[in-house]
Length: 173
Image 1 (tube, rainbow, N blue to C red):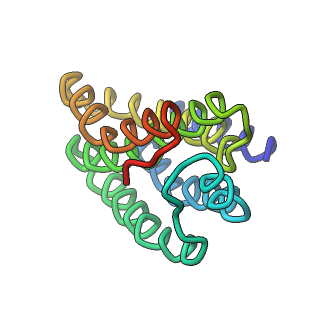
Image 2: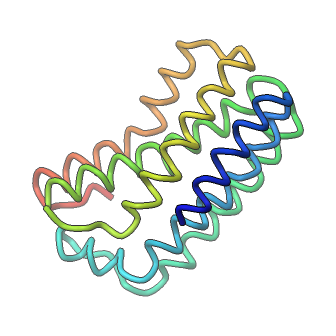
């Protein structure tokens, strides 16, 4: 996994140097898939141990197919439609699935003093990739107020989930 992080970092730096940033958004579904691969073996069991009511053990991987497909479609749109709004749409998706999810894993792991499956990829992949997306947004002249609005609204359900699980051991959705 460390090698993947180094390759991602080098690739992003090279993309920044040769002006091909917009194609790096195509990594979004791979970053998402890596996170699901880390979560799959034990996330539901961990979550059910720290929050109530429990979520079903079955169907976890199947539930990830739609967000993975969305990541692929939105990333392709942001790569091949060079305007700012194609990136804003991907950024909205990534706020919920990358940024807020990483915050969830960090906060709930700290609050419960336990390791949340997904913490490593949430921290090592999601956060750097999300910050890179924000930088790409600035490069494409996405207005700062739009980014702030997207970060707040798109992440709101996940922020509430984080707060409720971390503070009360219950789930929001």
